[in-house]
Image 1: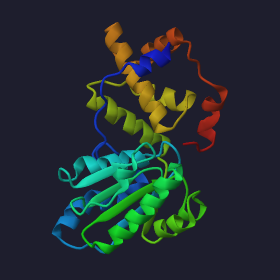
Image 2 (image 1 turned 90 degrees about the horizontal axis):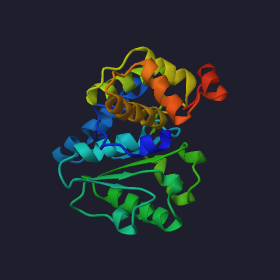
Image 3 (image 1 turned 30 degrees about the vertical axis):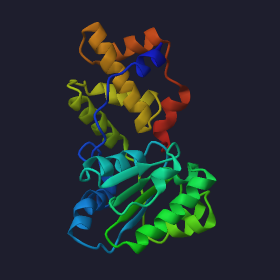
Image 4 (image 1 turned 135 degrees about the vertical axis):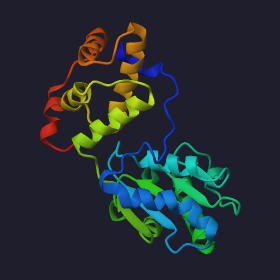
Length: 245
C-alpha cells in the first residue's frame, strides 16, 4: 500500500533556507536568515516575530531552518510535543523558535508568555513563533495573544502552483532524481496540493523508482498509484480552480 511506501523512507534533506522557495515571502526569509548573525553583532531592534499561515505553508520548515543554520547551541526549537523545560529562558541561547502556538497546552502557553517577557528584557535574544491564524484570531491565552502581536507579524503566503512545481523539482534534484516535467503537474492537478502531502508522494515515488530501477516518469507514478490502490479524488482534481493549501 502507499502508506507502507511513505512510512519506510530514508532521512529527508534537512530543512534549510536554501531549500525553502520564498516566493512572495522573500522579506520574511531574508530577515530570519540574517537574525542569528545580527544578534551576534549586538542588540537588534526587531527581535520578536510571529509567522502565521495555513497548514503545509512551511511554518515549521522556516523554524527548523532557523535552528539548523544558527551557530551551534545558539538556537532552540520547541513545540506542542516539547517538555516545559524547552520553553525556559537560557542566557546562553539567543534564538527561540516556538512552533504551533495554538496547539500548545495551557502550561506551555504560560511558559511561552514568560519566555517572551524574558526575551524582551534581553536585547541580544530573539523569539520567532508560529500559528495557524493572525494574532487577533489565534486560540490562545489573551496575554500571550497580545504579546505575539507586539512584534513583527508576517502572513506566510501560499505558493502558486508553478512555485510548488519548482519546489518539487528542487527537492527531486537534492535527492538525485531526474523528475519529468509532467509529474509535478499531474500531482498538483489530481492530489492534495499542500507541500507536506506533495513531498510525501515524491519520497514514495523516489523509493518506488529505486525498487523498480526505473526513471521517475508519469507512467511510473501511475504504476505506483495503481499498485497502492491510491486514486485521484474529484475534490483534489478540481482544487486547482480554487486556492487550497
